Length: 259
Image 1 (cartoon, helix red, strand yellow):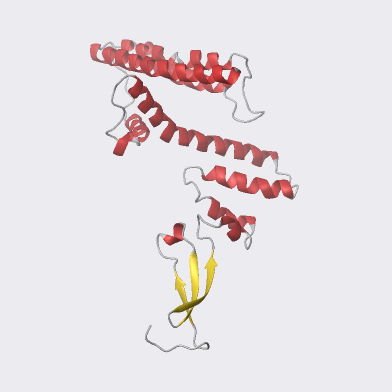
Image 2 (cartoon, rainbow, N blue to C red):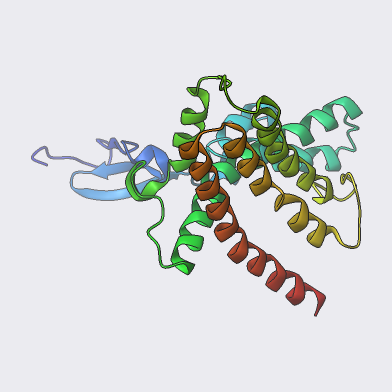
């Protein structure tokens, strides 16, 4: 700095925030006396850092937009844990309808995360156990495989083969979907929220979810087309090959929990 500064001629300079500092690095207000730094005031915050300091000067409603950015895939969870604290401290009674809506939205968020992440991870692990290559073509490392599957299902035509067995062809997908939905009946979504609290919940979940390959076989057989039937056989075999390592993983966790 070329200017000649004295104790009365001070300069205040902002060091940040600039991208990507807004997403994590603090802001510094520096007071300069010439080239010497005589004071530095740190400003904590900017989204992901110093959240407690930001919350000191904001109401709970003003603070919620900050916590939603902690995890863009689980915004409902971050908001729920944030509002639960003030509600318990202030003894605020939440209406039952709001509590039900919260649980529904949290479970929908959890299912969404499961579809995007856990489904891909399960395919990768199962493929590794079978010494096969897992999903790799739908985006880098196949992380959008679930999105590709959903898009493919949305664009499929709802057609019934004229020479096929329409009953088998229609009942097959229903069996596959109903078996998956029934498997959720023994899953405890929260402490008191479970449809059927059974002592054999794990085994019932494995047994019911294993019915899905039957629906795949029925659909292929009901089409009265050898190529569709071979496709149903392949899909059923693929489902069974995935279910074997999945069952072994679940049983190992269950046995560990019993101990």
